[in-house]
Image (cartoon, rainbow, N blue to C red; front, side):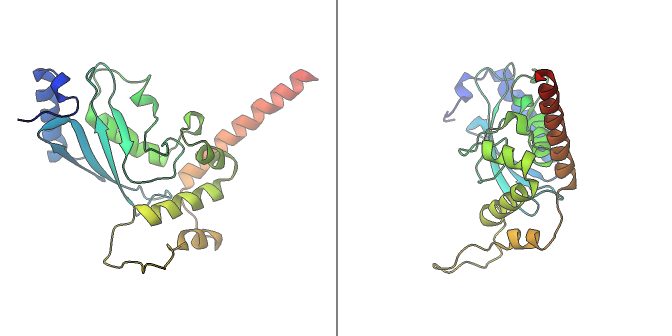
Length: 213
């Protein structure tokens, strides 16, 4: 068996544990997520994630990978989106920033927890730990613009192919933005969450203003 990535640094016990969890995820998958694993390197797990309904990512199929570090499970794995996405907690290079993959991690958590966390992140972004500062700012201050950008990126990069291909000089469709401008609604949970964050931010600013008086 050839070795790549970090598998050579994982103990046989951890390798068996990963295989066991992989089998569990095949038998009882996380809704909307399909996983594949390279048997030559169990330290890298690939998955496809369906964009949750009610979010700007609905209808998209997002490819991602989870990389187990040599310290796993004492330290969390690293998550990356391979499909481009406009999201506060995903960098331009696809790196995912989420507390469960950082300070909230504990060794009892597994791959299923990571997949669930990333799925939830698409439903409830956290602009306070943004890797994409522009997306975080728009989410808090101009949700409509954030939603339009996220929908457009989803339409360009994540919509499944239906056999139709654009002509070389044909520009990508911007129907996502047009539908939004015409009043289509989407992501009420995300919009409510963003509004609450903005209200909290304004309250803090008001308190600081009163203290200066």
